[in-house]
Length: 352
Image (tube, rainbow, N blue to C red; front, side, top):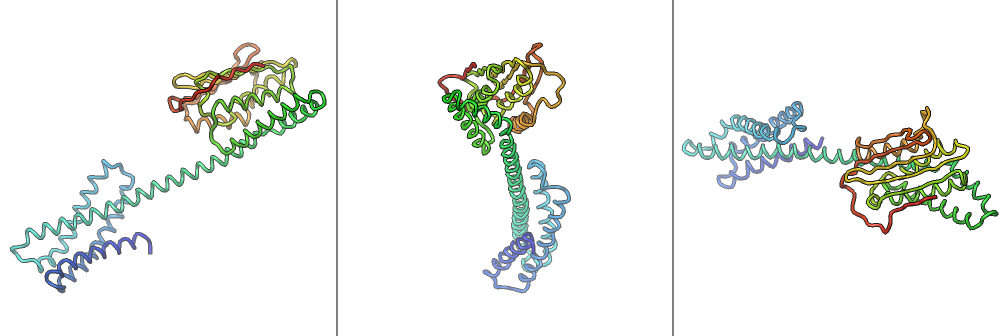
């Protein structure tokens, strides 16, 4: 037996106890009262079940409150009226002619309250169930997105980058042990940062810039004098929440498609500024845009998708040729006033 029918039988059995119990306190149980009670239970079960089917066909479960309320009241009056009319012959047997007006009005009111309560309980149950299902679906989607992000972030540990970094470290160990030690520290910090963020949806801009600095320092071991970089951010933007590895992916893109292809190398500059409503991120690098269909890369595409999930379609991304030998990547995030205030002793401004 379904939960609905269990509740139906329990509810109308409670109605029967009231309908039979109250009169029996005053005049004892009579066959007319028992018959009226049994008839009332049967009619109540039938009419409310038909009402349920009608509400489902008409889509009442999805109506807004302002449209649902008058329908509920009207349906309760109609069902109660039909129920009382069917019970009327039995009611007349137990009520004297002089007493009919008052008791009949009272009986109609009691039945109206009972039917109205049934409708409200039924609609309330389905509304709560819909809310719980929506929350469960939201949780399922969030868990799925978290798992996807975890896989994406772990995938960003570029094996070529690790190989190049370790290869550069091997040469530094004998040539410059102190610098090799510093590089190992930076690599460990970068890996720790990446693995920690695999369990988080966002990181602060300050932490993201620090990780980007570690990344650029490690790439400097490989490119040496061919890579120069500068990072600049204003004080107000450091507490803004951004997807992990957003700026690092922008910088990685700039090096891969710009600096690495130039015999003399070039420079990479990161500028981050915050306005009242937006966060502006610009990464510029020496090079030309050309006709590269894969210029974005998987990491950058993942970051942009996470940005859109966080901030909606207001996110702006533009990759363009700024100067004949300079490419700019601009990302604008509509943060509004949702970010908390945060104080930092000094904004990062790093030149290398």
